[in-house]
Image 1 (cartoon, rainbow, N blue to C red):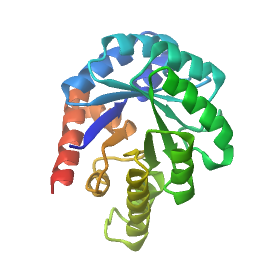
Image 2: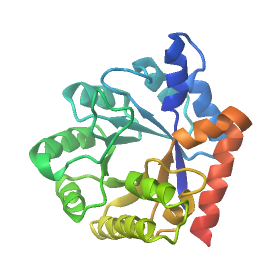
Image 3: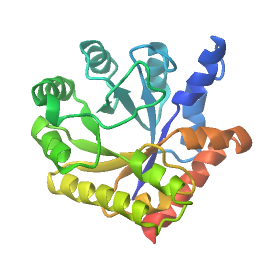
Image 4: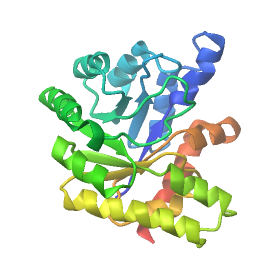
Length: 249
């Protein structure tokens, strides 16, 4: 069955805007679980712009579902991940000036480093994921580096969906969806788990959720945005139901 991982970074973004103690991401994690989330995702950035070290530790201690720690492939982050031991460590590219992650990790272009980082994380007992663009060369490199999971970057698909008038049958959308589907096929053939995420929302999620073999979707901004109006628990429940309906149908 397809699962939903909820990214709660933007709850921390609101807190950090005032440099105060609320809203608390730990509460958000609990609410997401009550809405049916199978996992909680946080991105501990090098500049600590939203999630803080103590957030990750408290969520790991209180979370009843798996914790997915998004992280850059730096020595500092590897050390933190090996200490906290989230259930999943996902390596992502990171730029100080970007608003959000702008593309997939170039595993193929830095294969020796990726092999070293993956090895250290696996030795600590972690499942390691790569956030990559839907490119065959990146899938092949991820398998060679030893990743157990690949999360396909769905940003280009989501942007095509929006720019095409939310028409899932438009040529641009179909092209991007086929890229994701083909990457998913290669991931599964390589013995890895196929996940997907980035810029997915309530109107574009169904085609991705219906792809063969996709295991998890990681979604944050859309869910937190809807939670402003209906509450986080309900927002998570709505997204989960959309995904499960698409995957079953």
